[in-house]
Amino acid sequence: MGFESFLWNKPFWAAILSWALAQGFKTIRPIVTERRFDASRLTGTGGMPSSHSSLVMALTTSVGKYNGFDSALFAISLIFSFVVMYDAAGIRRAAGKQAEIINYMIEHHKLPELQKVKELLGHTPLEVFVGAILGIVVGLLF
Image (cartoon, rainbow, N blue to C red; front, top):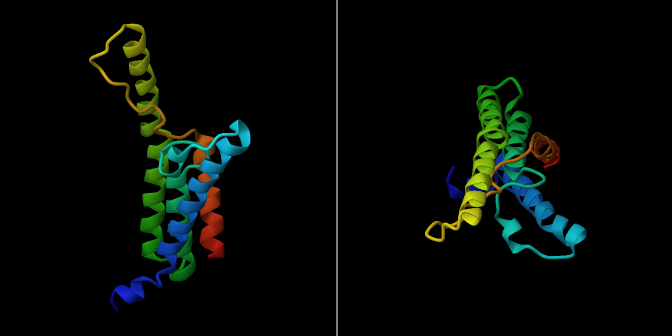
């Protein structure tokens, strides 16, 4: 039971795969809709689908699949997933909206000593939902 056995940890790899798929979709979307490649979407936050939601739900689903949906580990993972998804659609989204207001003030009140802040931080409930569905599917299929 060492690092080599960890490399075969199916819930871990299901989560990583689901995160990578979600980030990939975020990269493909601007190519299709705007005809431009945006490399920042590979690692950036926000957007459709939520990679955070996808990651935690793939992990949770896979833990349930391999350890039992009645296990304590599944319950812990599910609660963790709900906290992450609530944060993505609630707190981080609110922070993104505040960033928009701050950037507006910087731009329109000519405050050159201040730098603009990142606006795309959180997710809409739909982005979280789609990410969660992607994670569940990956967790079940992996």
